[in-house]
Length: 154
Image (cartoon, rainbow, N blue to C red; front, top):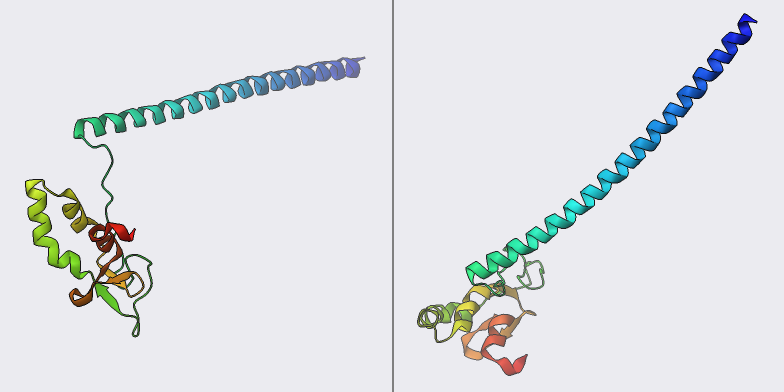
């Protein structure tokens, strides 16, 4: 009789422990789902705030579109196609931008030609034979400078 009572007591204790474990698991699952939803909402709000900040920054700075900047690159590689300059592959400095640098800055200061000023910033610098254009007696220049000077070529 005593063993039977002990067995019933242990069985009821086991059932109670199982029920409590299931309740804790359900509570944890609900809490985890709530926290994941909160995280998702916070990420969406963060993206929204970043977009607003960017729009306000552009408005206050008067920037409609950011000016593309040349990507820093290894001087041993072509600025356009990233070909490695070796013993037999020749590198060309853009002669047009170097020659017109003073003119470009003067034109930019008086506001008559912003393309010349932006050209001096966008010039690709050292390029390989394939990525350069022949300018006759003036030497070779990068493709961007050539396209700026000869719009019909694009």
